[in-house]
Amino acid sequence: MVDLKAKPYVLSEEDCKWVEDTIAAMSAEEKVGQLFFQLTSSHEEEHLKELMEKYHLGGCRYNPAPGAAILEQNRKLQKYAKVPVFIACNTEAGGDGACADGTFIASGVKIGATDNDKYAYELGKMSNEEAAAIGCNMAFAPVCDIAYNWENTEVIGRAFGNDPKRVARMSVEYLKGAHTIPGFACAAKHFPGNGQDFRDAHIANNVNYFDVETWDKTYGKVYKDLIDNGLDAIMGGHILLPEYAKAINPDLKDDDMLPATLSKEIMTTLLRDKLGFNGMVVTDASHMVAMTNRMTRKEMLPLAINAGCDMFLFFNDPKEDFATMLDAYKNGIISEERMTEALTRILGLKAHMGLHKKAKEDLVPAADALKDVLGKEAYKEMQKSISKDAITLVKYKDKDVLPITPDRYKRIMIVHVKGAGGAMGELMKMMGYGGGNPAELLKDKLCEKGFDAFIYESPLDRMKKQIAAGEKPDINIYFAGKNAIADFVKDMDLVITLCDVSNGRPSFGMSKGGGEIPWYVFELPVVVIGCGQPTMLADIPQARTYINTYDGKPSTLDALVEKIMQGEAAFTAIDPIDSFCGLFDTRI
Image 1 (tube, rainbow, N blue to C red):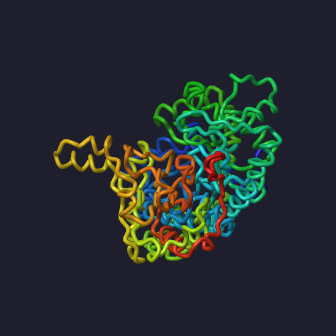
Image 2 (image 1 turned 90 degrees about the vertical axis):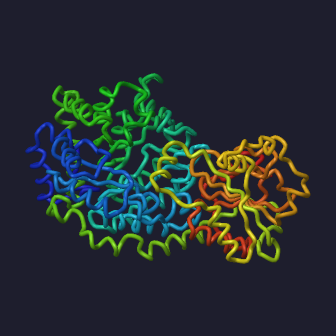
Image 3 (image 1 turned 45 degrees about the horizontal axis):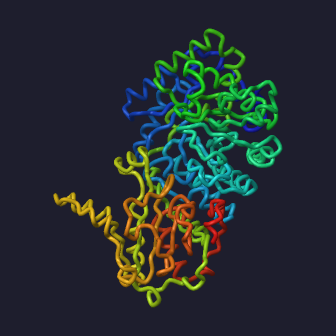
């Protein structure tokens, strides 16, 4: 059932005995607890003690906080854990996925734009060095989805692109980089593969439509390459794979189709039997609608384990979910054989990581070492290097626009286009997490180079100011705010439309008669820049010059200014996705 002497475990006889003896000595409650990853909600010692001593957790995730606070939380978790606990982080783009003061390095799509596998390796190495320094021992990464659908906002900026070969290469390099850190594991995500459906599995179903042959050549290749290179764990996605499931089980009806995390055909027959994956499997978050919309939660919890997942990500209510899984085990819904198999993989991975050989106080590094790791200069230099190689000139119809220099375009207007951030984005901003204002940063950087740059004020912004001042807003600013073209263009030499959209589509607001939407691309030079999600051409197809920077970090904007001042030849990156979004009009 589980070969602890094969990849990814490669355990000695002594290690195998520890796994077997530990399982044999466990109570039913302790066995069930190992099946759960929980999201901590507090750093208070009593809360963390209860999680470990009452629920016997196998793994933990946590909310953003400074590294020093996370380190102390992790110390408490290991202190009260009878069996050492997995402590996971989302270091898919840098150490900032482990703690708030970690270093953002680059998103997957940005590294894909460089077409340089070395950067994927360094991402895996550097981001998880920071994670390990605060006591994390597992990355929910790499993101090895394939960005086939430009409307899929869930992974379009996180995957390494739309080329399966590049995704496979870079996913393996990320894994190799992470494996330079002793005792550190990776859980690649999201099996069997996101990136086709435009919908987000957090709020709707998500379907992978490929047939058996096509899946094997694409997503299957990515996962097989990772498995062959010692992948420790896989995160199962709540993704339907109907063609493959029916090929495995022809008796399946459409109404019987389940997301991979609840499908034995996908998690056992495909992943275990066909691909030969011997490692551990954890579900994606269990509150996501693509998992919860098929049955009751009481049915769902044990089914995830019986389908072939070894760990279940997040309680809904700890008391209720723990009791549900415990009852399923005691009543035989989860068999003794299946429980032992899951526990063998969980503890086998912990033994592979060497957690069982460490004293409790050594499972988390000393606090005084943090200053030597977090924000290391080498990580910042890597961020800068990737930015220089990644910025992509996607569309360039007006061949005389570049280079942009003060003697050619002294007065530059920056139009800051934002996206509809959603509830989580707004919450993160309220908590103080997230970047600064890229439009202000770009303005300052251009002014430093001798440009006279300013930020456009939309009609809506002007009305907001009137309301804030206690005045009645002048609605005519919107309805009758149009100017003569000559008056509109006389105060500027060039416009930069900066699309600061991290998820979804740009929101142009009340732009009637104003300059928020670049309707004026034939009236004066306009450069549209996507500094977040790289699909802005779908909403601004009239752009004549379009550049993707993939983020609005200071080092990225430094590289952008340098390149636009040098000219077309400075742009060497490839387009890692179809930034034209498969649309006819974006290319004309």
